[in-house]
Length: 220
Image: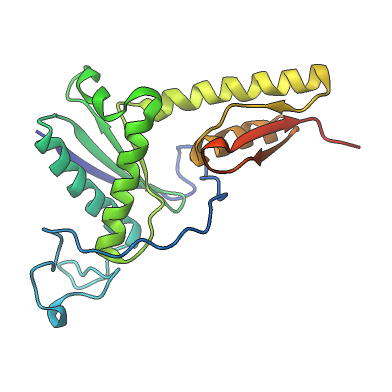
């Protein structure tokens, strides 16, 4: 059974701000906007469908776009979990101008959800893009939502922090530029933030799957 919980937190809330995604992406062509079967208004005539990005609640007020995309993504994810016969609770949180979805297993066993993470998180990244496309199809708006499953991103963030600090120490000791392995845009932003906090310089180099971070000591 899947349970969906939603919370909204202002930028001044207790939790620290989550890393912002690296904006270094190519200018790819916009994918076609398709309406997912089962989405609100999919079976109604066009004249009766709501305008993209608008959803009226019971009181007639327009829903917050980030909350709306969280609900759309959560519904899509819930269907996926049911189809895969996996149990998990879905948490929706809106903070710092972004929607975060996390799936945790019922009880303490996350082993069943590991199939949705995959080796090095490649399945998780694919699911995140799928959810973003579902939001795009339903609202005609691009989403920057972040998906986590079984706490993978939280553990990965700790690993990336250690990686960034090791690169900082190497750059300080050798004076040379330190090249890291390729990372996703989200992971690169985490490393950039850690390096900046240490007073060093980091920049992304390379294209596509080869895009990686180079850490160096400030010149002058």
